[in-house]
Image (cartoon, helix red, strand yellow):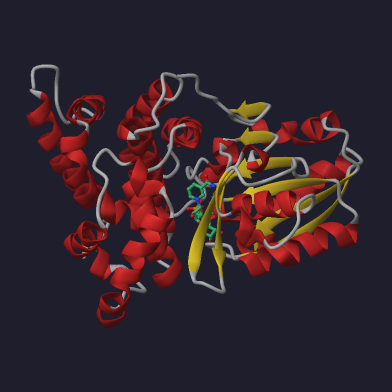
Length: 386
Ligand code: NAD
């Protein structure tokens, strides 16, 4: 069966890549940029540095810095209004997955009708959006290279996953130096998000020969570099390795899919505001154990890629080694149990867990899992992770 592989028209990767921004803006023929970012970068000097690069090159710009973690439809609407009010013709997203996802939705709504909720799901966007250059500061969601945007629908308390080629950034500029300021916990949590992209892209029912090598590369890079990036924040080789892992993981999962971990993770983010990478990390071992029987050979290959098993191990023993290895990686990284994550509350969790299972199934991601779960099994997995 033929499959399609979508990535940005240009992916600029490496030390100093940020300096390429003005040339990329010019190449796209834009006159006025709206920089979409969050309060942290508006105050720590990085947004000002980006504006300075554009100004030096004679490119006008304005800043929209209202994006919060897990961005909402309300923020996106405000961003669209700003984009129109300043007369911009190109967006630059600067930040982690939240500013990048918000900018994707703003770019899309610049040329497509509201409301945003009609685009939840797969391939629902009619027209290409405004041009977008994505500059990640985490390593990461991979959003800089994906055709996915995740925005919270505040009316329904649902994290909407939208996947469409018209959400793909035109250009990604991946400069690992921008990720070096990440604190340890953020490094760990977004790093496990990256790992989950590689693992889920590889075991997905939608995996392809184009995505498999990228997924395995992502997994290997995380196994090699994540513990060092956490232990030594100034280690450039580890930071560069994790930035590349995020790009490879993003290219892999956006053209294959994510599966049950992401399906279950989004309701935790929408309802309890646990950071996305952390909610993936707490679920990964339990969901892997549950899913092993559906793809034993693929999980064994992952175990070998991560150094948790060798060619001498049977697939069954490599799979068990993978689960044990993921539990121990979480311990090394200081990832708590779900119940110990800030924002979790037992009574609310018990009241909402059935809705969470239904929302997870409705997202479509669990249908790509090697073992497709029922709602009851999802509830059991939430309890196991608690
Ligand atoms: P984020 O963008 O939500 O940022 C989290 C916090 O970290 C913010 O306070 C931010 O200011 C701070 N931060 C970011 N970079 C930093 C740096 N270099 N130094 C110091 N602080 C920094 O975090 P994220 O995990 O990158 O993104 C999460 C969002 O991305 C979620 O909404 C998730 O659903 C979404 N996501 C999208 C995709 C996709 O393909 N579109 C994939 C995975 C996740």
